[in-house]
Image (cartoon, rainbow, N blue to C red):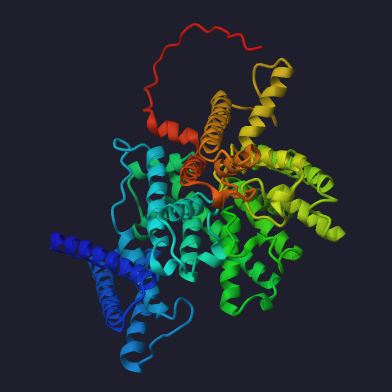
Length: 582
């Protein structure tokens, strides 16, 4: 009996997967009346099998009624039965203009069925086969190639697209870079833009985050081996915190994106859009793109586009969104804990004398926040004065402040622009180089060498200048392994960027070195800013940028760790000698 049920669940999963492929085919290709009717019948077959599978699962295991997943299954089954009732007895076709005038609600139900069945699969991260770094890299490669094949579907673009350009766009979206070879707003259809939006979301959070947490949520548990692998990916100090960390990541992401999307919707003029749905889609797309630090926009010239260039309220919302995304999930969670602690102390009436003060805001958060604020403030001041009579000249006094703030923060991997980037003064471009290279914070949606790496390198210089043998800050000592990692990341980043500049200069000798270097720094740090040469690059140079974007997103250090096997720790040490450096 168990074998038959196992086989039934497996068959149900494959049917739901075919249902997902059918949805993609439905949207991606133009359908005849007969093929559309066949697809609609198959959708209901998938939904029927899905409902039966869910009910059998509960009859087989009554403890499922006590889990949180019961509410999801209950609502999902009710939603599916409601669709059956409306179609079979009321005759409502659910025609809608939301997505290509298709019965979208049926497709949503099929998608929910696939998610439910996929989450029941046994996902095992076997460390004996692949280490966490290899699993992490493989997940990005898989989603990039899937995205590239989706973008070459006939209905994804208006005039078609080459596979190389589709691969470039998919890599840029998954690696949350924002460099484009074709205009997102005019070249891709609504279906194509939706694919890009989902690729940005999957790339910003990581597909393993979704897959692992949903598997845990539906099953109510996971293997010890999976917890070990995920603890390495999420940097959780305790195995018991792995899935709570994943939950926080998902809740924070969707919470901020939803709130940001609502603010963006309220900040834009409806006269700039043909319908309310276009306005809603614009808000959702830019909210996700901003939080994931992707820099993709459906506007021809990003936020520099006419009608948005002087919308300072919108720009402030976008700044806040991509700064929160660039801080990193552990930092945001730690800040929330700190505010919670401060609020609790304000309403505490106990004696404050000799009261224990816990170390709520950890060292990582303190270094990241101080570095982020310092870099942003210095960059804002420099940008304001250097561009005052140049790119800021067309703005009001308040507009100059907002635009300068935007220009100072967006190079740190956000990628949106509210000015003509190619018109920036030479000193400003040099500052942007540095900002792009530094990038965002660790475990965030941004790229670059990361603020903590830059902070450790700076603190190490100060420590050496003072004659100290260790780095101390905030009454804490930074571990030697952190210093070694920081300088490894710095060295590897310069090597990759340097080789990329050499290759592109070889493949596109007519391009200026400044433009090539800007493109390579932007690609490695997953920024998305450009001096306007991306679309005119040769195929070989585009491929170089694809590789650089990918390496920049996963980090060269992770790639090195994935390639080289870790040696076992041995309890001996050789005599130490100093090497002449200076």
